[in-house]
Image (cartoon, rainbow over all chains, first blue to last red; front, side):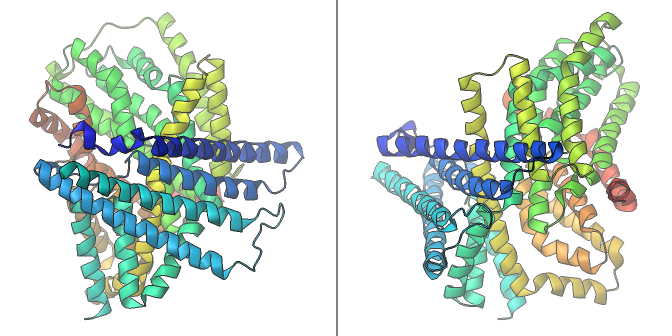
Length: 168
Length: 434
């Protein structure tokens, strides 16, 4: 098994990643609590005759924030769901090799996601996308997601480098 | 190379990637994007990835998932886990196998709060297993009841697995929750019946404990009454259309936070822990959902599901045979894949076939989750058993798996009943819909 020095969690002990984790937690929590309050108030308002217009848009924006932050936080903590049936039976070296490959592939995939999202954002740059009632700018939320996808790719890549460093 | 063959190779590649320990979401997305790049063009795959990722994370309906998770964590912090078991133990503990019956009731109650099999088995077992061992229950029987009972968390609404299925299959989450009520309750009753029969045959497996006087039973009921009212209000309100699933989850969060405050459990640390755990699980599930959506686009391009459906029609196999074949495939794959991966891999393939056969997608969702549950207890994967083994390392895994056998037989009978009588799942949504 990997030693404590090269476990994925080690990455979150470095100052920049620790700060990133704190940022992801704050942004995600704000998104989560805003979504909770907006929808609960919308239900209350509807039943007392004071409908809260635009609550769906607030929740949508909050969900973008919380999902982007949550995926980053999960990556920093290496809490992605995996099947362990085969990997648990491998030697320490085999496990490390597979985890390294897995992180490298994951980094490329999230770069691909970011590239695709940048392409769409670029195409829509003159569209001034915003929500209907509250005019929430979707372009800004796209940027949040793109930043998150890029950071996730960087975290995966950093983990590959860290594993290589530990091996050499 | 034909398009269908590329689809089949994609599925084989996906299984290999999963076996090599790649994150489930990454494996699904990689095969989906790679397949699209091969079948259409890399440019189309890039644009589709950009569209699907942002569309998924900005979907209002997906807000239901983190909010229900947060509600579960607030309920957990309010102390819901121990209370459900303790109430049931005071009512039925004095009967043979009574503590095992109480475990099933506790799992059903906590399952309604947590929506997760592993969380339910870990939480209820931490209270029930020491109690059963203290009173001389056979270790295999005790762990068997707990591992089986834990699976109730996946089906009893609000269920995380049903929410994910609803999103992938574009089905009403309210209808899925309504459809899960009777199968969930009958499953619990089937387990209780098994305990009753097994303890009749061999009373030494679960000896009776001293009867709790009535004056001590009611205070325990009062301890869970508020949480039960909250769950009934949230799930019931959703089923009868008072609020949308996301609103129901938001109301549940506020209600459960209120319960924490009522029970004087609110603190900064408790809030931070609930938010942190919710965000970690949410991030994991979002990656898996994005991957599953990209994979399902690839599968639909290959026409693999339509090809399989046409083959079934040519063979004149009929819906029942098709469903039995699907159940066998799911049970076999469930031996090596975890529940979420199994559901997300098979939904895009099986759902069009189910549609072509004229079966209800709502029923299929319940059938899929019910089959997936069995994978939580049967070897070699049996994650619930491994969770229990972590908690009681002195009980050998073999003893635990042997203890599961009577419950596994019950699971197969219950699954057969669900296939034979679809009304078990479809009656309640029909009544509420009308």
